[in-house]
Image 1 (spheres, rainbow, N blue to C red):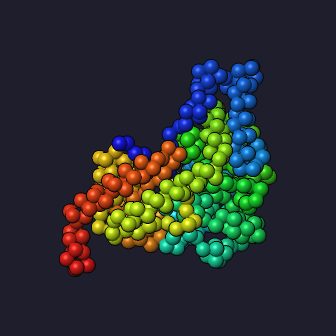
Image 2: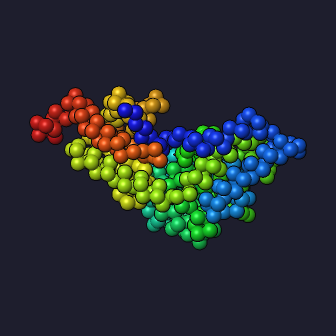
Image 3: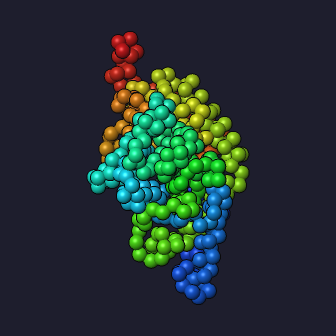
Length: 391
Ligand code: PLP
């Protein structure tokens, strides 16, 4: 059996999405900047996709800008604000558990003379509103806090953070790459100025993202060149990708309540059964304030890479809490950020569910995982000591 449980890494493109995209590679390939009919048809398709995405945010069409990925949207929001407002101040507040697209952008700006505060999180991954208030200075120009964490699924108090930012007149950006498609993000109700999202996390294609930029907010461009995206983001548009993104976003929000209900039930079932079947485990992230599709569990006395290899041999694709795939064995900054020791962080497993997940797949993982963990523990000298009562 083949089981994909890494939907937070990426998702398959849905058939309806691909069908919507294909004509824009083969027949409708006109450049949207061209004035003849085929060009204008491409322009119309982009506008329709923009409209679909705007609707999911309860936003205006002209508040949605297409980008090349979620990382670009994050870079644009943060660098664009920093450069536009540097005459007002040089201080940016973010959290220690952001995606690297935010963290590394902030580190880059630090080298350019900006001052960055990285707010800590509690053991469940939440930032403290008190810490946020205390961190604000006269020079603070931006708060960038992610909507939901990609590793542990914790959902931040975005509305409260937005209110604090608004009261102080500070711009607020949220990286909603993981939240988009799972949570309703209503920009009429939520005091958020900029939102980053990405198509490949919600059954759209890779290589296309968007930035919601509230009307009237002026940030600098990241890409300079042609006048695309109303002069805000140069580069010939990825029309097929944008059309696919529009279709995927529309589908994701058509029955979001049912999606949430189904995945929450699966998530809770999977978590409960794994925790019951395997001793010395810890659920990472917040129990309730978490993404409906995220399970993240640490298993003491095992290495995450070993778990992944064992699962892979059983046909299960999942993700661990360390960056081993990128050639380093450093445990994830998120797991260390919630206070896990290196040893425990190393034994972490992230299972993320999606629209194609079935009860049989959940049952299969619950059936296979205990033996994989046991086999690894049987090889662990630490576990030997635990069994002998020496630890
Ligand atoms: N932000 C978060 C929270 C993510 O999870 C990801 C991707 O995993 C990104 C940003 C980057 O998105 P993209 O892969 O579209 O660049």
